[in-house]
Image (cartoon, rainbow, N blue to C red; front, side):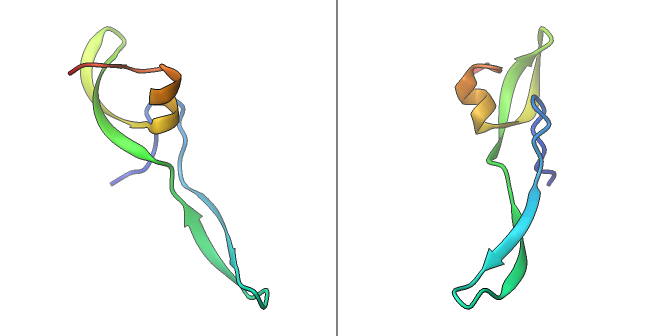
Length: 63
């Protein structure tokens, strides 16, 4: 399943886990992407949208 927001294009970013002894391992930061039924360009579609876009009102949800 792709973790990309349909509105803002937010996708996973990468960084490091840093332990107390400062050993560094790779990790992935995933955006909080939810499947929603929304009105996009005047049409009702299912889309994966991040919660920040939903909270900001960039998406009109259809229930």
